[in-house]
Image (cartoon, rainbow, N blue to C red; front, side, top):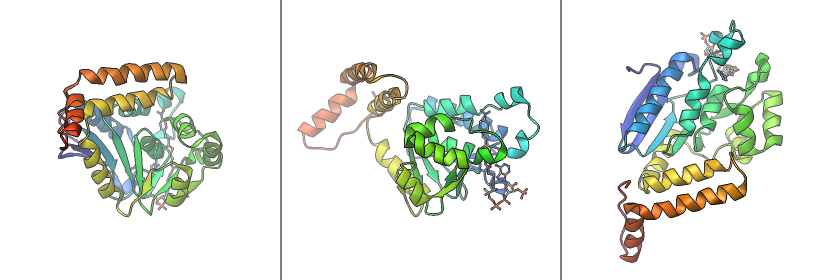
Length: 254
Ligand code: DAK
């Protein structure tokens, strides 16, 4: 597939996806979602890629494309197709980082919410303004946001449809950090994470994802199995031997 609505590149071990509809402030239309879906498929299939950064040159994304949604009926709205792609991105076995410049609104913020980590620029403006359009967040906003920042703060944002700035987003725990250049900061973080053991990263991500799906007892059992299974990997031997031999480990993903 030829990408037009997104830009896709691989820098060392990091896949970089940049949304590319600047004239519409990167509003997410069906073409963007289709291309994003294909990029996610390629990333999962490529063992050379260890980490993913999603960002933009200016605005992250001002939401789903409102003009595309105006005349939809309920069936068409359901078929608009965000959810399967966002779920695939959330379930990628590799860590994902959202580099948020400018607006991250509605479906744009929901895209950032399916990433594992979020770094905001000082100019970032985040919110779920769907209520102002007579709808509610529908690509995970009512589910992932409360799990991240708590129900009370999520209601504060969703009921009013307000847009908050980067310091408030940091205070809410909606973003991990604020950086002058969020894309550069995300690439640096990606490089650090890309040096870790891929199978351990995958296991860590899957175990943490269990907290949203199960109670603590089942989660602890899942963790025990995941943790002990890593002792069958070459990277576990390498990681522990390198410690004993006082050298840096080289992880191969096996
Ligand atoms: N959709 C379409 N076009 C958009 C857009 C959007 N979300 N946001 C901005 N644009 C376009 C504007 O129409 C304008 O285009 P032209 O008129 O020049 O052709 C251009 O981008 C520049 O925007 P503005 O002129 O409005 O720029 P300002 O700086 O004055 O204002 C703004 C920036 C971000 C405050 C404003 O553009 C704005 O309020 N935008 C809308 C934000 C919003 O309400 N976002 C939420 C959309 S609803 C789904 C689940 C969920 C969803 C979809 C599907 N399924 C389960 C299937 C998600 C829904 C949403 O995200």
